Length: 142
Image (cartoon, rainbow, N blue to C red; front, side):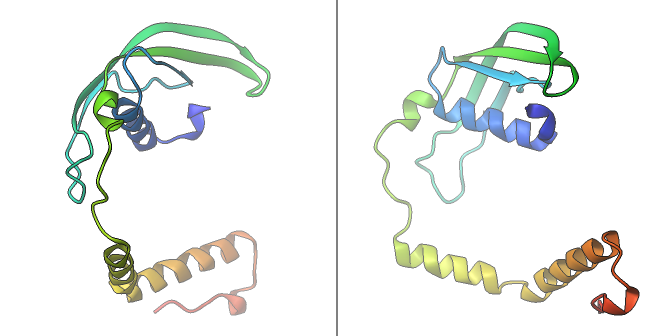
């Protein structure tokens, strides 16, 4: 159900479908439509990934009862009218070798480690407060 997805996630889902699926493919979502048109920017680290504009056509909107949600639900039936899917299926060259990918992953993990630790501790503390742990059990934030 798309009702579980944020607007950003629906936009990114639309981009992924517009980039990978072939024209004429049918896509069904519930509760929320996909964006009917958008432009996918080139990827900074992978120039071989297709970029450009995709388009969907809304074929039908169907309202009806859905026992899973306990009430009214809406299905949106889209057809891809313009896609980048033809470009996506071509053979691609790896943008990096495994060493480069591992090196960049470690650099990312090491960067801003102190802030990530603070964010993690804050999330743990918030969960503990939510679940009713005593104050003297809560981690100290600095």
